[in-house]
Amino acid sequence: MAEARMPQKSIPKVNKVDQPFWEGAARSKFLLQKCRACGKVQFFPRVACVDCFGELDWIESKGTGKIHSFTLVRVPRNPAFKDEVPIYYINVILDEGVIVESKLVGEKKEKVKLGDNVKVVFEQTHNPEIKLPCFELAE
Ligand SMILES: [Zn+2]
Image 1: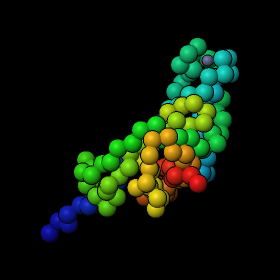
Image 2 (image 1 turned 90 degrees about the horizontal axis):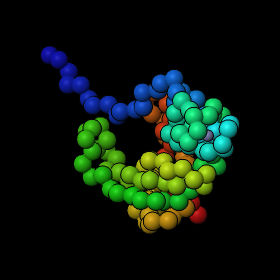
Image 3 (image 1 turned 180 degrees about the vertical axis):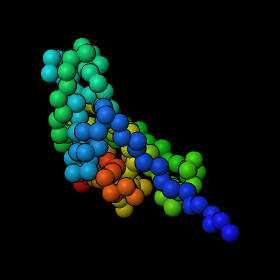
Image 4 (image 1 turned 45 degrees about the vertical axis):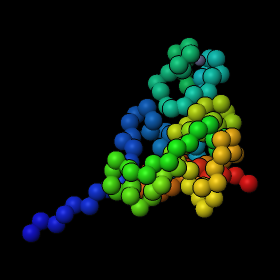
């Protein structure tokens, strides 16, 4: 008899452009791209600067920012995430000025308010090479 296949949590599919980002995350570093020509900092990873098409360097974010928006996911599309509901889906404005989509974790997450300070934490996935950047409320 065939065994029912348990759903697995989806994880990012790494490509050439964002590979350095995921390598950084695996080392618990949140990397951003900075344009060599105009200095613009951008996220998510792209092949060139979105303002001037300049070449990019990778810089390490401080990993701190503020809650820009949040919502609660009570019925995840992938049933593998049922054990995490409600999932606090957030948009964070990092101190470097870019917006990041992520999830809020930690024991105090139900106290979240717009504008709260957060800091990045990294969550291990079932793939040992992939850690997900998540955020916790900062003190
Ligand atoms: Zn630029």
